[in-house]
Length: 357
Ligand SMILES: [Mg+2]
Image (cartoon, rainbow, N blue to C red; front, side):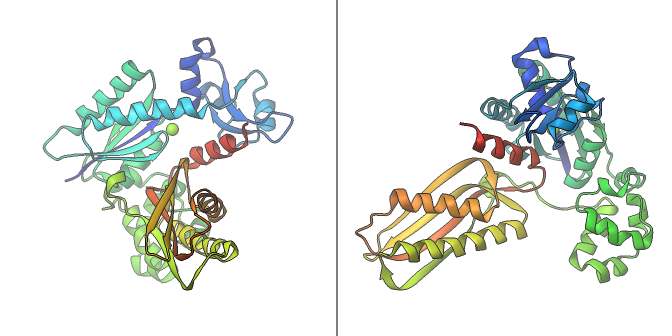
């Protein structure tokens, strides 16, 4: 039986801000980009602010209407990344099987001969005493159940779903708590009057397969609390790339850029299809004499966006292509892949980081 922990830091950005400025503690706090008059958006709200109905991704203007006394601070992603790194390093003291899913979220696999619940308790208390942050941890026999259990017990939560209890644990939860049951899927599930995960578990798998194909089987398995997806550590993650050889060696920048555009779109499609985001974008050039260079740029915030990949690859071309030399082959790659789920805060991070001077 596997032992999987899902760990999620509580109101991460807001919690770091209160560490930096203790006088903000117990006050409703909103980390947000932009300003309330303009198009500001809430990145994270402290639990004090959430009591007023404020939540992530809400327009700041609306958040201020709900909670006028809230203190608003701009995000400081460099500091958040540093805290995130400290937490992930602490987890890796216990095992290398740590899969970071976003800046404040990770799966950890504990080998069957160790007491996962005790390790989880210790991690939680050390993250508090050594780093100063609260988190919620769930222990279960697979990633899916651990993730759902963690979300159901935030904040300051600790929960163990014993092996064999997975289905029973999920059954009463509303269907939107099941990863993969997005709005469109839920709309279709209304045909079977599915309100809870337990309702979904009772729909015959053949009917789900007929409606959703492969996804139907995933839904069926998930509703029964079954999931055998592995922990994906960064070292093991594959990369996605495309490359093309020209019919004739070329020095024409327009031709190179045009191919980069096509390949970037292809790489972005493949990333989305496999539910990955990439931290590193790579440009590969092979010159007419067969010397080959690869140059890369690493993002603070991972992406699966075609435009972004294209811009980064073209910038690498601009910096590194020796224009006198004809190019025989060009490639665009996405490396350092992470699972795309749970990266919403990171996407916010990108927007802010990108706009700030
Ligand atoms: Mg969190």
